[in-house]
Structures are given as structure tokens and as C-alpha cells.
Length: 409
Ligand SMILES: NC(=O)c1ccc[n+]([C@@H]2O[C@H](COP(=O)([O-])OP(=O)(O)OC[C@H]3O[C@@H](n4cnc5c(N)ncnc54)[C@H](O)[C@@H]3O)[C@@H](O)[C@H]2O)c1
Image (cartoon, helix red, strand yellow):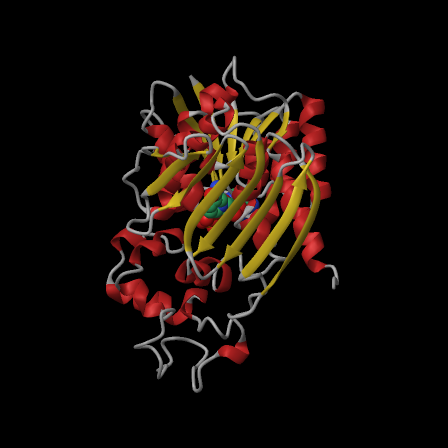
């Protein structure tokens, strides 16, 4: 039995605790902490039997000492370094929401602290635990593609998702959270290192914020969608879509979204950051970025992140074959994967299980997958070594951002 404390009971903390509660023979939630009492209480009730103790701020939580084998830290990006440092000092193993910290120095420091204390930190790289990427990893490790020469990947954030999270939302301003390449694409950066089984040696990156800017506002667009915008009928970013086809996105940002009435949602649109015109926000993170790099073992990588596509795709070029796959456009959770063998010229479709979950909460099955793996990672004979697992991917992303910010020809 692995005992778990949850620090930060928002969208992510709630998701992990719900999945942990669905495996009561293996996990027990023994403490919950959030500044918002209702969130902490909801998560505390995911414990076995009676509700687990609740803490209403991080000071009280850490002052109570080590309460569990593992602490899940799912507070916001800017608090991760401090919260993880305090958890290490108490000897907690940690499942830490990505990004681990806001700078490379802080990430490396967490790794040092964790090694010194014999503490394991796993980052929430939930994609590693999806049926799709598990299959890709198994194919690469099997040698079926021969020696891997290069990897290409792309991530289409999808325009409304970009608007919700990276224009209007929590991750719109780099200084408040982290640059887009870490906030959103740390998964992809991790996958490069995980699949190549290597670390970055050289990297270059370009990109910027092109579209979600004031000068692109259609004529007469007011500050908020609810201020009588003349473009609301045709604008794909109209916040009133939270009342209709984008309603499911509210559960990440509106307490009680599942039971909210239309009136509650209209009030949310009228008053919250998520009702602002996407061209009149204070966002500064990029809406497109590319990376080209070379890993220590010689594998070259390239990556495109864009707001204006949907889903991830990946191509892995090996000396014996090539793998191509990614999201199928027909459904948010459908994936396609095929391998072409150079010798025979034959292409084989590889079946991938399609988890039946909503896009964000499920991450293609990865949210459940990582919880299901917690005892194998952190249990008595857990496979994670002390230190910050996933540091290599963060280094790749943060070096890419440094390169993007440099003046280059
Ligand atoms: N792994 C992934 O794929 C993935 C996906 C989305 C978000 N995230 C990351 O997960 C983290 C949480 O995101 P979220 O969407 O759940 O955000 P959220 O805002 O819904 O949840 C954060 C919670 O932390 C609480 N909190 C803040 N400061 C606190 C403090 N000092 N003490 C106690 N509680 C505190 C807030 O009240 C809130 O309930 C972020 O760092 C985000 O970048 C990861």
C-alpha cells in the first residue's frame, strides 16, 4: 500500500486523486491541501473510509511533517520549486507536476537536492504512460527500426485550447508560469530524450507570438466577448462556446463546473479571464515554435509546435525501418501507427488501444497510466532512482527557449 498526500487539489490534483481512489488495494490518500477548502475537501473524500485530514495552506501542510510515502505536487508552475524543495527536506518521494521549476538552474538544483536526500522525483510525463507512446517505445527498444538516425515530432495545440490555456489562461504569461516550450511541450521534449535514450548536445530554436495580438483584433472587437462583439457569430474563439460545445473545458477553471447552470457560466464569461477577447489579453507566450537539435548519441531531432493544428504526430527514421504515427483526426483519442520496413518495402499497421476518455482529463490514457504505475515507480522496490527523473527533457526545452530568445541570422 502506497500512502499519498495531495498538495494542490485543482484540476490535476483532483484527476490523480480520483484515479488513485479507484485502486483502493494499492493506494490510500491520507492528506489533502489546497487554499480553496472545497477542493481540498473533495480530494480528501477520495481517501478510504473517512475523509483524510485537510490542510488549507502549504505552510501548515509542511509543518505537519511527513504524512505519506508520496506527495503529489499539483500546485501552479511558479510554486513547484519551493514546494518540491520543502517536500525533499521532509524525505517525501514526489510525483511533481511538470514543469519541475521555472529555470534550468532550479531544475538542476532539485535534482541535486533529491540525490543528496535519497528522494525520488517523478515528473507527470503522462504521455510515457499512454498506450500510443508505450507502443512506440517498445518498437524502438525492440530494434525493429534498426539504429535510430532521426526523430521528427509535432504538436498541434489546437486553436481553442491555445486560447483557453495560453492566451486567456494560467499559462499565458511566461513570467507567471514558464515559456510555452516548457509549459506545453515539456512532454515532447521528454519524449525525445526518452525515445532516443539520450540527452541534447546542440539545439537551435525559432518562433514567436504571431496571431493572438492586439493588432489582429477584427475591427470593433471589444475587450470581452460579452460586450456585444459584432464578430461573435463567426469568431471561433467566442467565449460563449463555453455554454455549448466547449463546456467540458470549464471543469479545469470553474469550481462546480459539472453542475453549473447557464446563468453561472454567463457570469463566468462576463467576469473571468476566460471571457476576454483573445486579441485583447496580456499573453506573451508563443503560438508557434520550431526546434532543431542533435542528441549526444548523434540522433537528430526536429519539432514543430503550433496553435493551428490538432494533436501530436511523430516520425522515427531508423536504418531498418521508419515509424509514423500520431493522433488520427477522426477522434480526439484515436491514434494511428504504422511501420515501413526498408528491406521488404512492406508497411504494417500497428494497432493502438484507444482510451475512451475526454481529451484533457485523460491525456490519451496517460493520467490513469501514471497513477497505475506509481507503486512500480515509488514502491519499496520501485524502479525510479533518487534524483529528478525527466531532467534531460527539461534541459532540452529550456535550452531551446534560450536559443529562441537569442538574436540569430
Ligand atoms: N501533466 C500534464 O499534462 C499537465 C496538464 C495540465 C497542467 N499541468 C500542470 O499541473 C499543475 C496544476 O495545474 P491545474 O490545471 O491543476 O491548476 P489548478 O489551478 O486547477 O490547480 C492548482 C491548485 O493549487 C492550489 N494552490 C495554489 N497555491 C497553493 C498553495 N500555496 N498551497 C496549497 N494549494 C495551493 C490552487 O488553489 C489550485 O486549486 C500546473 O503546474 C500545470 O502546469 C500538467
